Amino acid sequence: MRVSELVRYSRKLLKHRRGRVLLLCLLPFGADVAFRSAEAAMCCLVLYFGSAAPSELFFGSSPELAACSAVCGVLRIIFCPPLLYGVTRKLVMVSGDTAAPSLADMLTDLRFVRRSIAAELWCRGISIAAALPAVASGGAFCRILLNGGGEDALFGLLVTGALTAAMAVMWLCVRLSLAAVPFLTVMEVRRSALRTALFSLRFLSGRRSLLAKLCAVYFIPLAALVGIPFLLPELMTAFNLCLSIFLMEDQYGGRSRSFRISGTGGLNERDTA
Image (cartoon, rainbow, N blue to C red; front, side, top):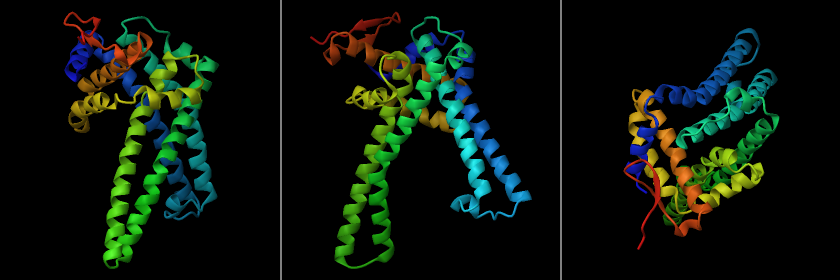
């Protein structure tokens, strides 16, 4: 399976429904921006009417500012993950060209809401745990760089720099694997949230390069912001389609069987002979 095949088939799936898919893709982003904007507005009000100094925004010594950030953070955790996972389920159904429940039905399903929130919390915990080695080695690198020294310091600087780079790459691999958690959560409903998050690390083992290439193809146009209305639906559809094919490979004979997208738009088993 190649990136060009994913892009071509995702464009075919998006025919006559690109606007609806774009709206779905923007819903989680819009909700997150709304909560963060509300948090910024509340902090501005506290700074204007209260006695807190602007520097306390970064050090958290003001109880009023800490309370505002905590309330907005809790609300963001409660409302954003169910919306993200509901949109993912809709996009999966678009990739499979089948019907899906409405967002209202999914967001009023308490089991779905609890599971999506738990999966998001586990993802954040795993991501933070994976980032700790890079943070520790990066801190050591900065301390050696600031303190200076002789040849021993130079050797330590090289070692900690290489270790920081390696740990950063490992963290990026973990983050890329955790990007499959929303998809796996809505597709593998029998797994718990923790098992789904841990399974995503094994699920994308050896497969991250294809997803990384797919993201790299769309990165520059999306970073320019102008291409978001046209390319964001393609990226999200291709991403979920790629994960669907990976899941199909695991379900039908393991990774020894590979599927490709045919010229007519169907999925066929690749001839490896």
